[in-house]
Length: 400
Image (cartoon, rainbow, N blue to C red; front, side, top):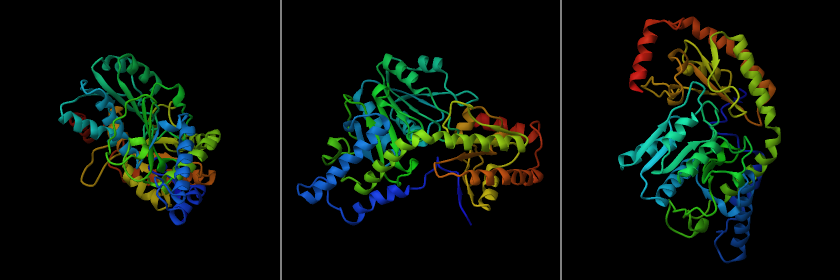
């Protein structure tokens, strides 16, 4: 069965050019880049070149790039460094819709005595800048937000948030794992102090990422040990991985000019589904979002059931619900947006890439009406006034 992969916000196909670039460093050039001999020295030069490629993608200087193992490490390192830079401040501002790599760290810090403010979002998944301004004070050590939401694709006004943070002397960190390579970013003109990215979201392998740290920021390392990464991240470099990330960054910088192709396919997929299937809606702001992402709510049915039937056609997507075995609780992102319960459980995220084709989009457009129709025919719910749904909505709101 042919795979139709529309789950690129979860992970991406490793680009063939990236595989070709990294393979010699798995097979032939295996020297340690810190070694004094020329065999290791040539590897060291390749590492410097990869760092430059990543820096160019986000408009940064080479020395501002720290290689990491993943987005989660980058987020942890950024938060640790920000709090270490201002140890007298014990207040953090974040949002209610962050990735667990941020939310769980903040919850852990609350147990350590930090005060954390969780900013709300509206029905379109957007921040209220007035709430942002009211929440950040002179006692705020860190403001940490995502650049774009992984479930809905909604993009936050990070530069405006950063300007408010700067006025109060707070460090500003942005989780840009979903954003880098999808929209242009220029750190040279940014209010951002620290920015996280991950290779496997832009067609590099899993296990490699990077953290941007603004020149002049007093970065305290999260991992202690050797001198690697200018003393900012200990551990022998994952040379094949960072070579791959460098090549992926180079390709992404070139591909930014053709991102409109993905957006056009996304828009067509969205438009056709909404026209062909009643009681459907897009979750998130229609304009302020990533060009590759759509999150669509199908009333009265379960997202996991949709995914099960899509899988029979070889289609890979994700549920907008974060349900796990033994739990029926929907996505914290969609809940924070205040969406009705009839939509919360029946939301599906489709996320495209440069490898997505029009034929693949056509297949999804054609099979979705049949899938949704079959599931709705078996559903005990047919309207928003169902007593059980109302009770359940109230129960979810109480838990939240």
